[in-house]
Amino acid sequence: MQIVNNIEELRSIIKWWRGEGHSVGLVPTMGYLHEGHKSLIVRAVSENDRVVVSDFVNPTQFGVNEDLSSYPRDIERDAALCEEAGADLIFHPEPEEMYSSDHCTFVDMDKLTKGLCGKTRPTHFRGVCTVVSKLFHIVTPDRAYFGEKDAQQLAVIRRMVRDLNFNLEIVGCPIVREPDGLAMSSRNTYLNPAERKAALILSKSLSVGKEMLESGERNGRKVREAILRNMKAEPLAKVDYVELVDAETLEPVNKINAPVLTAVAVYIGKTRLIDNFTYLV
Ligand code: AMP
Image (cartoon, rainbow, N blue to C red):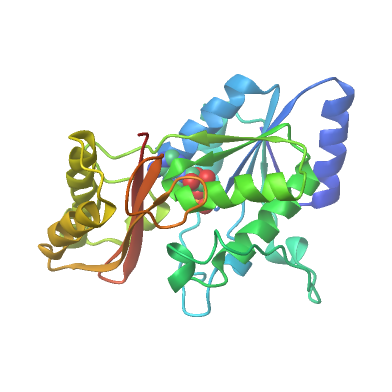
């Protein structure tokens, strides 16, 4: 497995692979890889002849007061995980390789990016759409793999691919959790032991909502309130949002009669964590 930092070098490798008739899968990540990322890579390896993992902490998707500089990084550990998962190449560019100093073109989206995480992170999805478009142009994959952990991101990317006629398939992969239920995230490393315990409130509260939906509750407001009530019992948790939205349009729903995404974002101390589940009616 090779690590490539340079766009032109990556392009020539992809061209060579294409000449050999190989299909190409892409797994975009910000690195500090865990079992959640690994599940995407393993799936990509099973469905493509060659797999590229991008490992890039993308500055344009961080807000001014967010954790860009403290975001954890460990390329050597990442390389070992990618190798074990069967990836062929890690694309690990410097920010200057991805963004010229006078870069001024962005991919933006109305609607789907305004609610949920877009409320507290108003420029986040512009950064995500821009970097993912750039990666799609550089790698030209047949398939790209994204986790349902970032459900809004997955919906936004699917919509961008449809709206801008990118010629590839987007594959959504299930959330991988720690044994106690916490969704795996590179940001979990920020949590001290008390916060790590408190962070269980996300998956626990979501299960309360899930049980209500499974036992026939169709009033979105009631489910939302039950989840919120549950969260408030945890003193270290500060709720950013609890929302029930249409799984495709991400519009808020009250009467549930189509697939519904229940998504939460919660600050545990200074760390903002997200989690969700989709209920298919
Ligand atoms: P990140 O490095 O956090 O930007 O994540 C890169 C990709 O891995 C995204 O598509 C995420 O949705 C996905 N991912 C992150 N954590 C998990 C998880 N616990 N389970 C499944 N996919 C995940």
